[in-house]
Amino acid sequence: MKGHAAKLIASVAGLALLTAGCEARSGNATGGTRTLKLAFVTNNSADFWTIARRGVEKADEELPDVQAEFRITADGTAAEQQRVVDDLLTKGVDAIAISPVDPQNQTALIDAAAKRALVFTQDSDAPESARTCYIGTDNLAAGRQAGQLIREAIPAGGRIMLFVGKLDARNAQDRVQGIKEALTGSNITIIDVRTDDVDDVRAKANAADTLVRYPDVKALVGLWSYNGPAILNAVREADKVGKVQIVTFDEADETLAGIKAGAIHATVVQQPYEFGYQAIKRMAQAVRGDRSFIPETKQIIVPTLVVSRANVDEFTQRINTLRGR
Image (cartoon, rainbow, N blue to C red; front, side, top):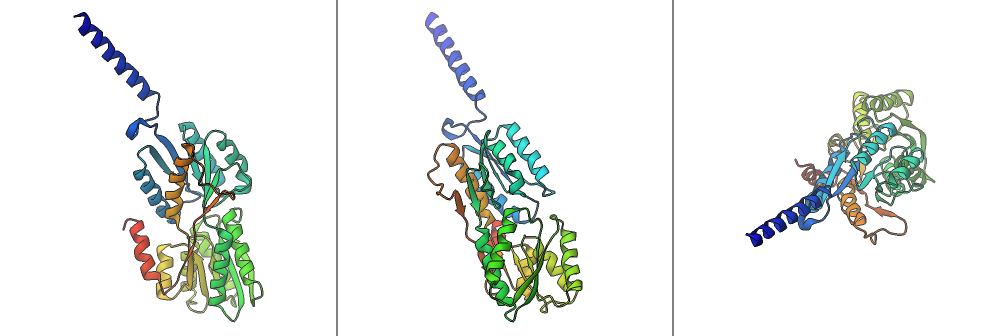
């Protein structure tokens, strides 16, 4: 009996220790490793981020010791991003990958968050902040790519207008600069850069107003994903398809359909799937203590691609697979 009691007491004690160990962790993964809580935060609710979500989900599936949370900011403001980050930090996340909508004025936000969790930037960088690493496009190079497409679209030159959600975002600033560099020495003049505060209705209104106010405009250029469809709709309603060229960014359905129809010259596409996939994979690696993958520049560049009428069908099929269609 005494031996049986001793074994029973030992078993209970072992169970108690096991239970305590489980409760001390946020969760268990294969092999008893602590589950990491990682988060990916967007800068608006455009369809572009649907593809990034697939990358986040794929990395989450592949990493049994990771719990990844995907957070969309609906109104695209710095204030909303602050609320999302505060909520994530309260939950005790280990790392956050954020696309700062206003990097210069969000340095304090990122620096404060970096004292409580690992912080990566993705899509839009904040190089002056305490972020550990950036994963995304070289937007200056992408702007130069777009500039070359503009030169192809209107070889004789002329006046053009650029459109974007916010000029505060680093990616917008770099794309504008890249376009200007690529157009140096050409007969192409940029009238202005019109902003819309990430409002689809306003984006279309800006394009429509440009067509009326500047009847000699030769090309309209959209820098964010929803700008392409907004511009295309305005050009169609003004009956200027083919008369006004369109160059844009990203792979919105309407943009790809417009390229196939010949209404849009081309688009510069990023690889948001890779933003999501690599952000989760690399954050998990860094939180575990391995930062050997981070280059001296602290930037992991995901290359951009050009989609034109020549390759739009192939690209559309591939991107729809990523979207789960």
